[in-house]
Image (cartoon, rainbow over all chains, first blue to last red; front, side, top):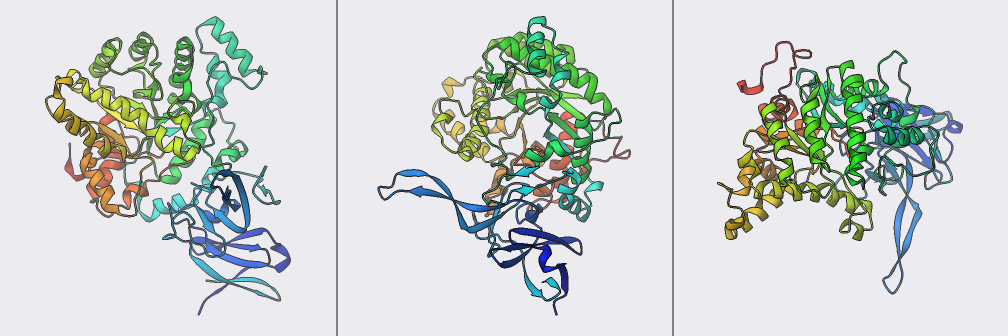
Length: 122
Length: 412
């Protein structure tokens, strides 16, 4: 049975914020974004960087017109990325899959929100 | 400090500590028992521009010094008369956070230079014993249109380094910058600094347009060969280069720029027979990764077999000369199919010719684990690449860290 690790009281993890909690000899990063909770091991699949300590950035997209001409770039806020601060590897917040090479991913944990707060199941 | 992101929420960071950033590196060090392994980093960096005022004091030319004092004081605007700038954003627009945050890091005011404190922090986290430290903005100095500025700045930097920085800690060494756009000044640099403590060799930043085969350099190569000091070619990039100017993403200009200059100089070096003229001069190619080496080996061998009359000094294939050279590993391309990397290691004779480096604190840094975790290397090869090859290359005294050091695998 999974062990419950207390993350924070609900009010202490507002939308758009992140908490990092210890888990043995590692940590787990817990995010609340647009009402949903996500939790990942704070360990990049690249060289082991603290992925959850980096920026949370929207996916960057190219704007290509119907005539195939390049029109610039924009942020797509429907897909947020966890960015490892060591080298910039980016992971889809919803799945933990590395966006540039989908054979890599962050280790995902289940999160539950109870009356007395938020817990990760590790 | 607020780091702007894509969201309305900026990321607020109140403090920055290299030791905390590299906690996972320290865990890797401990799990692999890397403190028992000699690790020599042949290419790391500091930000010498943060010490510009001190460096300017060592400029010998009074007119250039006055210019430098104005610039390093209140400044004269956005332009620098001393260090040329090129467009670029290595930090991936703030995603590699140690770039914008480094100014927040506190170091003790105990007389030891801040760069020493910062270097030892990341070295200890990774398990690195010794480093060869390079500058950062000065890597573009070879693009300065005034050769006398490159000479003045590099000489001042080298004097500052050997007089103020290197004596503070024996774990930090340097391959001193050569003002390669002025061959005579380069010769003088080797002559004047070659025997200074902590000077383990000399380096040419390869992002420049002077050919290595110019007769004007021969006496400098000979002097380095006589002194037993290796010559490094350290890569960089120049987005203003007419060729790279046709690229529109930093990803491309970085991936190509950090390889093509070294590839060009390496081809000139080999085809002009410089390894035959200076057989004992050790040459190392730094910060181009490794994938370019098999490419260039195959291209040169193929052409040489048809056009050997254009390279009459050669007594073996170009690739065989290249196998006698040294290579730094970072940024090591790690393909998903490791067979490709294993073949590259075989082609460059990695067990004796490859030297690990971190390039820390730069954005595409490597940890020792990139070598230590490779499944196709045995323990001796790992230890050679992580430290022993560099120890031999630099003739480095490692007794301070390993009083009873024995080369791995019983090699001499």
